[in-house]
Image (cartoon, rainbow, N blue to C red; front, side, top):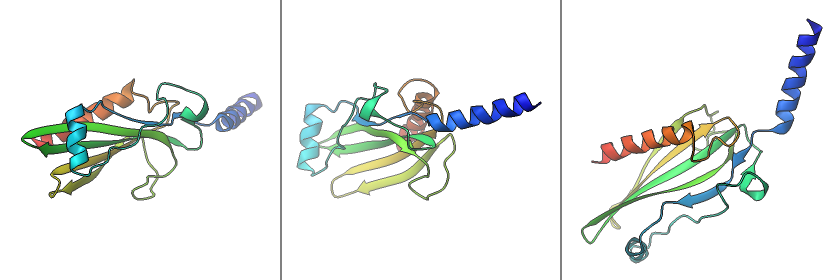
Amino acid sequence: MSFILTFAILMTATSSVDGLKCHQCGGAEKIPKFAKTALSKLNITVDSLFGDCKKTSGSDMCTNGTFCIKRAKVYQIGYSGVNLKWTSYTKGCATLREDNLGVPSNQCYELGDVSNSTNGYTAKRVDCYCNKDFCNSSQGPFSTIMMTILLVLVKISM
């Protein structure tokens, strides 16, 4: 019995020392050149891209959270009769939800729309949390959750 207790204590201690490993980067779908021109004319800035979302070491990863996060912003814009839609994202570590300082669980939270009728665009934000090493990559169940959320958002906006 004492062996099992010692083993459990050692496993808990070593798992907390290692820490959760998450991708730390930012990216976006490829935006066509004509769309970049439209965005520029409307004074809309595109989120900056950083890091390499495929790497699992160095500055492209973090270990300072209890959850990995992937934050997606889904933009939709109408310009000169053309509707454009694209997604940008950031990945990193989190301990608390940024929107309400609550403790996240393994799920996605839709955080509403930002609209600008003058410029004719909307942006929806979705924060997804998970707690396995590198679960905020674009592979695996995390991307399935994101795709489901994005499909629901697309259907709602139609």
